Image (tube, rainbow, N blue to C red):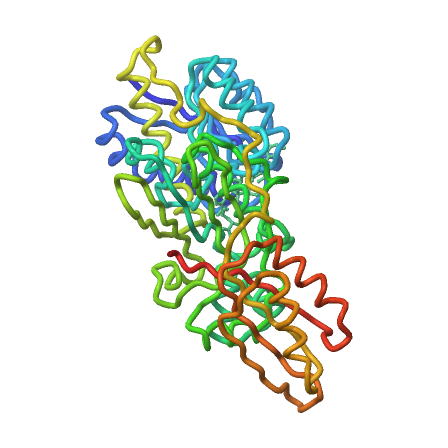
Length: 435
Ligand code: NAP
Ligand code: HSE
C-alpha cells in the first residue's frame, strides 16, 4: 500500500510540501501505516530556482501527468488563481482523485461547484491550508466542534496586514512605511492589494462562515474594508481609550434563521483582549460554540512550512479515511450541505460602537453643532477628546466614541456632518467590545 501525490504548483507552498514529504517520510509513514510518495509536480518554468530542490524528473509542464494520472490518488492544488486551478480540480475529481487545496480565492468563488462535484464523485476536497496557514481551524469547525451550534467567529486572518498594523501601532510608522518594510521582509507581495484591501481575509472569512453556519456568503454581499486609510494618529487615540486596532474578521448568527452578520474591517478592540496580543504575522481565531463556549486558536497564518504543515495534514487524513471507510459508506462533506446564498445581513443593520475622528475648525459652537447632528440621528456619545494639531493651526482633531448605534443612523449623521464647512476630514473605525 502506498499513497501517491501529485502537486499542481511547486512554489512557496508546493516546495514546503515536497520538503515535508521527503524529510519526514518515516514520521508520516509511521502515522499513516504506509508511505506517501510525491510522483509529479506541475510548474510553468522548469528552470526556475526552487526553495527545496526537486527530485530529478519530478517537475513537469504537462498537467495530464498529474490530473487524471491513474498512479496519483491525491492531487494538491498549490498554484493559486481561479483558472486553470478550477478546471484542473474539477477534472481530478471526475477522474476519481481526491483534492487538497490551499486556494481560498478559488473556494470562496467557486466553492459550491467544487464541493458538489466532489460529492457527486464521492471524493474529498480538503482545504485546511486555505485559512490561517498552520492553524487547524477547518478541522476544529468540521469535527472538534461538530456538536455545537456556532454562535460567532472572530479573528485575525491575514499575516501581512497584521504585521503592518503591529508596526504602525508599536513603532509609529505610516501605512506606506510599514508596507514597504513588509515587502522588504518578504511578507507582502509586490502587488499587496488583496491583502491590504481586505480581500484575502474576506475569502478566508467566507470559508469559515460556510463551515460554521452552512452559509457561503458572497464576497460582494459582505462588508469588506482594508487598512489603507489607517493613520498613526488613530493608533495613538486608540491607546488613549485603552484599545488596539486590528483588521478583524467577524461573523455571527444571531438567530438560527439568520441573517448572518459577516464583516471584515479595521476595528478597535480592548487592549486586554486575547486577540489584541496577536502581533506581527501571527493569525488567530476565536470561535464561540453553544456548548463549547469560547475556543481560541493562534499560530502562523502563512509561509512555506506552516502552510505545508496543513497541506500534508490533509493528505494524511484523506489517505487514512479512504483506506478505512469503504466508498459506499463515506460520510457527507460536513457543513457544506445546507448552503444558502441570500442571508447576509446588510451592514446598515449592524449595531456597533464607533470611533470617529474629525478635523474641525476651532471656534465657538462647532462642538455643539456636531453633537446636535448626532442627537438628531439617535446617536449617543460616550467620550469626546479634542486635541490641537501640531504645528498649531485653527484646525483641531476632535475624536468621538459613541455608544451602540445602528450603522444606518451613523452614516446618515456623517452625511449631514460632511456638508458642514467647519469639518474638513472624518474617519470612522468600528469598536468591538466583545460583550
Ligand atoms: P507561488 O509561490 O506563486 O507558486 C505557484 C506555483 O504554481 C509555481 O510553482 C508556479 O509555477 C505554479 N503555477 C502557477 N500557475 C500555473 C499554471 N498556469 N500552470 C502551471 N503551473 C502554474 O504561490 P504560493 O505562495 O505557493 O501559493 C500557492 C497557493 O497557496 C495559493 O492559492 C495561495 O493563496 C495559497 N496559500 C499560500 C500561502 C503562503 O504563505 N504563500 C499561505 C496560505 C495559502 P512556476 O514556479 O514555474 O512559476
Ligand atoms: N497573504 C496571506 C497573508 C498569505 O498575509 O496572510 C496567507 O494566506
